[in-house]
Image (cartoon, rainbow, N blue to C red; front, side):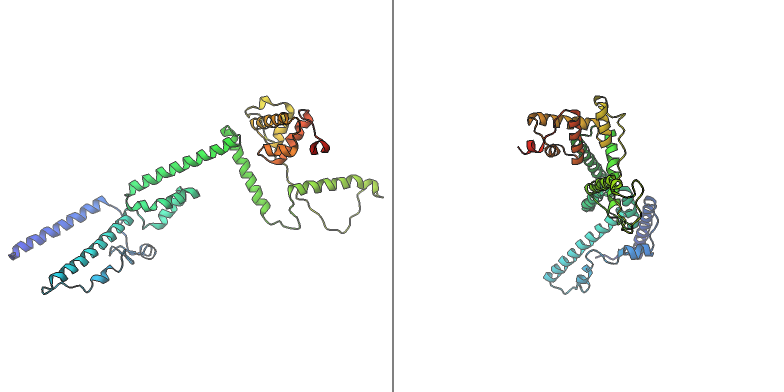
Length: 345
């Protein structure tokens, strides 16, 4: 092999140094980002050491242990040289994989863990969106940042569309046909959930939470006692003297506010009595008309033997509301009330 003279070697070195400087200037112009430093935010959290371009625990962290004692001598056999060459090729493949994973981390900005976490918490709040993002994370290994972000946004948009379609189907099954009715339903549902959570909290004092049915029976019982107490009391209509006895507090459910039906669709098809019933029971006119048609058709089909318990099974709403509607139809004379003997027969 011909040995280059000293002047040629100096020229090669000068060109090599100049090319390295030009390369560093171009990279600085393309990526004007701030240079990471060996601060606790970069070292303790992510385990990254910017000045060394390394992590504390690298991919295939023990790869160097295999080649640390490897030596190539002139006296080695061809088989030994071939085996050592294979070992070096395996090591180079591990280095390539390590380099790919580093580029993945830097390209997707995964070192800024807190910043990325805050952005995800603010942008994707629902449980379904977070689960979807966790499922598609492996695709980041084969996609660049822009392609991965586009894929994520499109899948999130598809998920939101599917959830909206599912919600609209639920509205359709419940008889809700307009967005105005859906908005009122969501408000009523949120209020119901809030009341349920409030009722589940521990009560202060000696108040005993009772069910709605037991509340009604207790109020009815004490009202009857108050009706008969003046005649049997020697004090007449005067208030009875106080007796040292435990105070019973009734957890009577507050009646909900009547529903405003002025702007609802189908309200002109209701009579005044039917409108008052719908306002009290908080039922929309179109839903009430469907319930009315169902009960009256079943009454005619059964030959006038439809009982209240059977009517509750026809309508998938609160059984108390169905019973109120059934009693209302009896009061209006549309159906007749069955006696016990008739019901049993």
